[in-house]
Image (cartoon, rainbow, N blue to C red):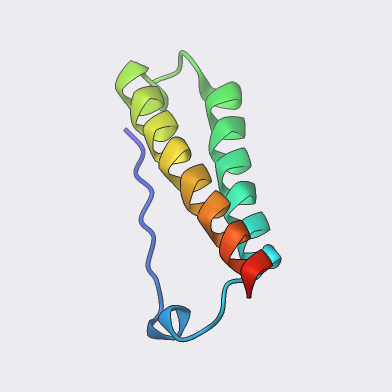
Length: 74
C-alpha cells in the first residue's frame, strides 16, 4: 500500500496563486499516474491504491484549475 502525504506551509495561504503553482500541481498528478503505469499489478499498486490515487488526482486537477483561474484574474 502506498501513501501520499502533502503538507501545506503557512505561507501558501499568504501568496497569490500563479501559473507555476498550477503546473506544480499538474506535475504531481503526472508523477502519480507514472507510478500507476510503472507498478500496476504489483504488490505496491493494487486496485485500492489505483482508486485512491486517481481520486486524489481528480481533486488535485480541480485545484490546479482553480489556481490557474485565480492566477489569470490576479
